[in-house]
Length: 114
Length: 111
Image (cartoon, rainbow over all chains, first blue to last red):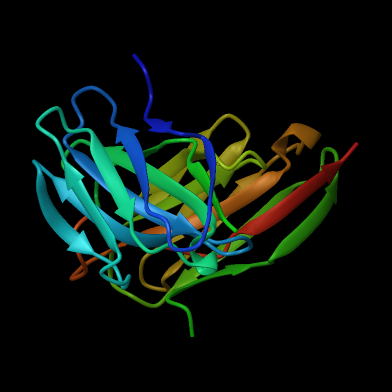
């Protein structure tokens, strides 16, 4: 059974551009959460989706948006990229999304904004 | 003050040493997670616990709910244990699925 897969693994964008990151959860998992990890810091919560609905949103600007598809995969979109958006973006899937259940993390997408 | 604090931030040990990493939190939690992150960035979940103690191989995790404190122990450490160890808590009252992470403890085990 495949783990959580994220694509692309790395990408470089210029300021002002838009980017879409993708995540496929473990089969059977219905919840996907997105996190941003800036170098030297712990991950910060961006979004959680469960059964295609947004269940939570962290303290990020409206330039960040996400959605979940009927197959439970998810996309994270970031518009009008800033240098400060350079980070590792992690996706985590879980069965229900409740915080008492285990999470499985993907390997992340490393975004560099130049 | 961060809601999840880890100590130490950096730790260098010799092979075979017993290692302890500490995590303190200030919020009500439903569960606490210990995670391992290697230089490539991928995160591996080591433990999820809400009470007591769990053991897996050379790793032991304990939690004291009353004191809002957890420890991760590594027995007979090995260079392959070198990684960043992160404590994260699931927060009662917060958005479901919202884990609050500590900044991590960077462990380097020397042969």
